[in-house]
Image 1 (cartoon, helix red, strand yellow):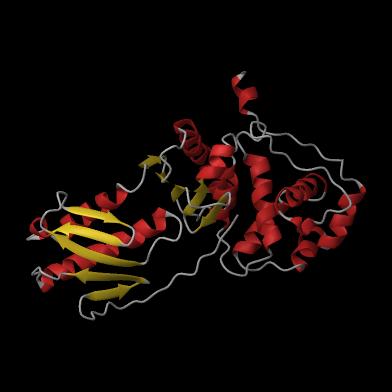
Image 2 (cartoon, one colour):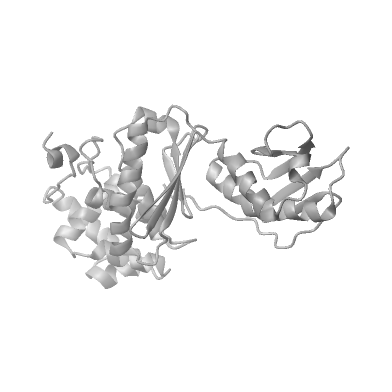
Length: 329
């Protein structure tokens, strides 16, 4: 699933009493009963805007944008932080540089997550966050391994300009399956628990990152159909997850999206034009796609191609990835 988020951009910081706002986030400093110098407030505010937007994005689902800062002389940690609230030991804060404040603030926010890790391999980076303390470590490692196995191939095949720094977030509050936005993929902890073998959800969602179509590039059915076609083509263990392309029936349409559209695309690649899906993907990214694209690329409209498919839907060779076959287990 691909989700496009609209970012709020307020470029200027403006102080109103002890509040500041930037990029849709607000920091309110409650210094009642304490004496915090203006210079220290400015350091704290700068550190906040370098850290909190990152935390809110990484935290996953509907993280608070308004944050209150409180001070305590008895707080044992230098900084304690969670969504919407920061508590700082006022004695610790004295004389600290902005970099020191920023580092401590980032570390405080990270403690809200059950898992936080960052790995790099051959020019690709993955930051993995889980808010689920019960996430199976085996599933976690499979998600990570699938990223490093599949994503570089998708980038090289479809979009070499795609980002090389991706964020995975497993969230207990998110109730769908998964969604991609920007460089982040949000996974449902509940879904992963119930469908622990469905590792190629990574393949589908990372393709959305590679697609990077932006706004109004083309119909949703086409975007999702391409992503599932890529899952079929490059997935690492579709057999293990019992995932397959459904057989044709007359109630279907190419606009059904996902696996139905992906099977149609597989047939097109085998019987009409090899490389067709990659060409469509390029046009979508360049915002050059129209329904005329089908005629330009194949000589027929999308509706004519579907009619042809419906006449011979079983003339297709399907082969699904199977980790057990590869390992001999």
